Length: 322
Image (cartoon, rainbow, N blue to C red):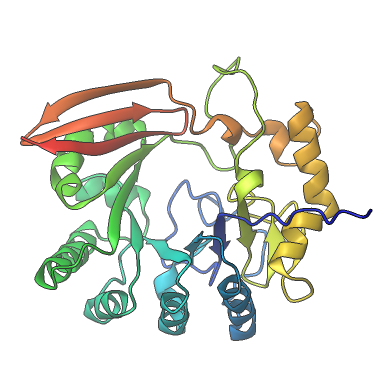
């Protein structure tokens, strides 16, 4: 008797509402340096995100939805419509990453009124000189003022969302700012991460031999990336969509996720440990990005902090308040 294959669901979806950005960070893998952009800059058509969200609404499985990609979500003119729709879908944990330059009163009101569950704030340190050097066109004083207003709005409303996460890139020039960064933002956040610095185009997290035995990459087993034109990419490392899997205008998300020949080939190669010849994966260390290398606790100010070290980042979380 014919047995129907089980349907698998992605637990994370990145929905790139725009790949346009108001900054040109020096080491951004999409907009940085001399402009490694390989895709047309654009804003997602309404019919694309509506189709995606309507399909997700039909699922029973929970999914984390990120409405960012290679661009700044607060530049997207219909962001409020997107967030209003996501707030109506009970199985969606929605939020986005932002550089916070445009996080003004209107956007704060929009975030608070549309039940945005999480925000990831990209801020590189506490020194305006180094921050504004690396994040070209940014102004740290404006960003800090904007984020402070958001924190105050959340406190004023007695809300525990959006859950705030802060991230700085671990440029050698700003690693001495980690402690003041933690003192500034961790009291208001669920976590702070210091990401391993990678030059433009690099997906390497270590030199020479891998510190761990290879395992299949968890990204291609749980994540789906939908580009600004509906094209589906392999994972969040596929920033230029070098490994296209299909288009959500032509197929459903689940059809692509379960049946894309290229994605199935990539998963098989990962299971067999034969990734050297794969486009993207052949020189990528993301398969070990969450492998714990060290974990310890320390006290800073009135916070007891747990630090978790992986090849991709250092993660800081409050344990208990003293």
